[in-house]
Structures are given as structure tokens and as C-alpha cells.
Amino acid sequence: MWYLVGVVDLKITVRFFASYREKAGTSQTVVDVPEGCTVASLAAQLANSYPDLTSRPGALVVAVNQEYREHTFELSDGDEAALIPPVSGGRS
Image 1: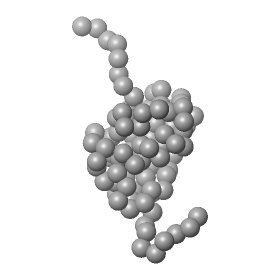
Image 2: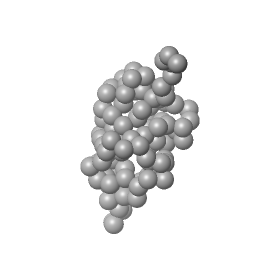
Image 3: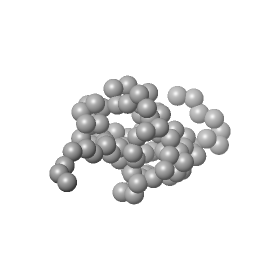
Image 4: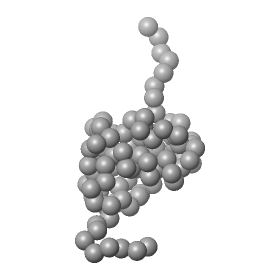
């Protein structure tokens, strides 16, 4: 891997829940992302690494450190991101 001076990689733990866990084939992974990475960039990276996950990374619901976040949210080193699948069904 090539590194540029001044570029810092952040380690982000990603947890996959329910159908995303099945599609990714794992419940958790750790990814390296560049400093300044947003939830949107992480979602795109995950969709590229796990093609069965989604064809629309912009539609992924992501919680960072147990709080739902917009795709513009900037990640920090050591964050935990959780991919939450859409919920359907239930009774009225």
C-alpha cells in the first residue's frame, strides 16, 4: 500500500446486522479509511468490497457509535459503524 505524507488512515469497525450480515458473509470487519472520510465514502467502499450488500450505497442506513448519522457525517479513528437493514412488516 502506498502512503502519502500527511495522509492518516483511520480504523473503523463495521458491524453488519441481519440481511447485511448474510450478504457480507461476516458480522464484523475493520476497514482503513482516509482522514476526512464520511459515512457516504464508507458506504461506497463497503458496497465495492461487498458487491452483494447493495447497489445503492447512498440508501444505506448507518449508525456511528450507536447513533444514526447522515451520510455527510465525518468519521473519526476508532469509530464503530453499524449497517442497519430496512425494517418491514409488523402489525397495526
